[in-house]
Image (tube, rainbow, N blue to C red; front, side):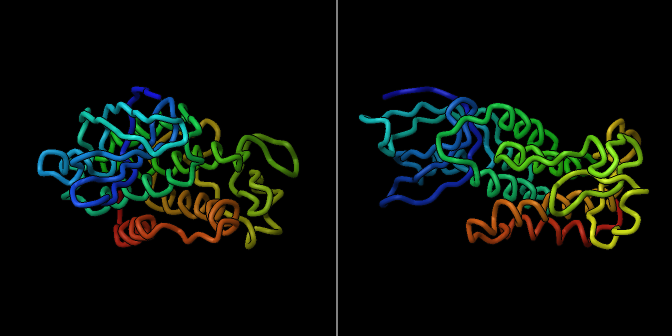
Length: 243
């Protein structure tokens, strides 16, 4: 068995004295693991960093074996965020949440969104809103997409300001008024036809929205905690006064 693909590194763990087990989110083969011989060497350590974009060739005798990766760096996203604690937390949060995807199940659309977000991690006014949208895309790929296009109660497509924490559907201002204390906020940048600048409050509301459904629909049923990297990210965003 052999294939070649591109991928984003999700995790690396030591194996033996010099090797490493590499976990990739690949374009055509989904989340995939493999052994990298010499993965802890001085030559390969800078490449085998979470978030880096690489070319990989995987070989194994049988399809269900761990197999081996041969790798080559395409883009070193990890190096670009090492001096920005918030961006580094964003990168590691994205990688940790990507590990929720089923192994060896392709998600090419999410892969494209992932590369897009990684490409903006050096723009602190841009990437937080993109990462919220990425988390929405992840929920969609996992089968728990939100319906933010129309009001769950009235069907209208305007003045959508809330989201039901149970159904994941948008709710209009008028329909949600009696229940607003129990509804989640739908930030302006996620509404249909949204324009204008994204505020820090919008971003915080966006992460609260996606975080609720990640916990309720994905993590809790698997008895998994929210990744520490995402919690660090929210802490950094909480300390800021503006994007």
